[in-house]
Every structure is written in structure tokens, then in C-alpha cells.
Image (tube, rainbow, N blue to C red):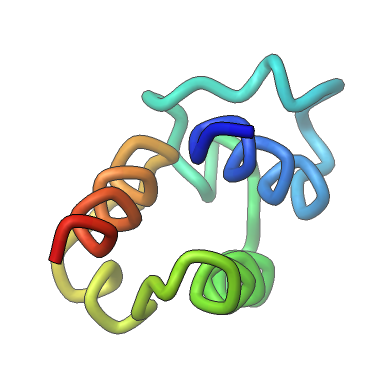
Length: 82
């Protein structure tokens, strides 16, 4: 399973606004009007990504004002290359 699909499935478990992982696009913000995740759900999501992909949540939070699915994926991919 590719990284995008894995992230979609992780996000789906935390989101109450999307009917399936297939509905999650890279442009969607994690919070607010996007996927509707609150701050606790976003932190839980980031910690799960840390466990699975080695992503450091502090790095992602410091680099992006608006967290999107795409910015999360970019940080994961960058971490794989480093």
C-alpha cells in the first residue's frame, strides 16, 4: 500500500466528515472547513504518523501554517529521503 493511501486511511479514522478514505484529497486542510479535525485529533493523527512513518510532529507544525493532507504527505516523503 502506498503512503498516500495509508495516510488517507489514518485520517479517515479521525475524521467524522468524509464518507470514505477515497474522498480525502491532498488539498484538504486537516482542520476547520476541510476534514474538520480538532486540535486533539490532529495531534493524535500526527503521533500515529510519527509511529508509522518516523515523522516528527514538531517539524510539520513549525513548517506549515495550514496543515493539509498534502503538507503531511510532503513531510513524510521528505523524511523518507533524509
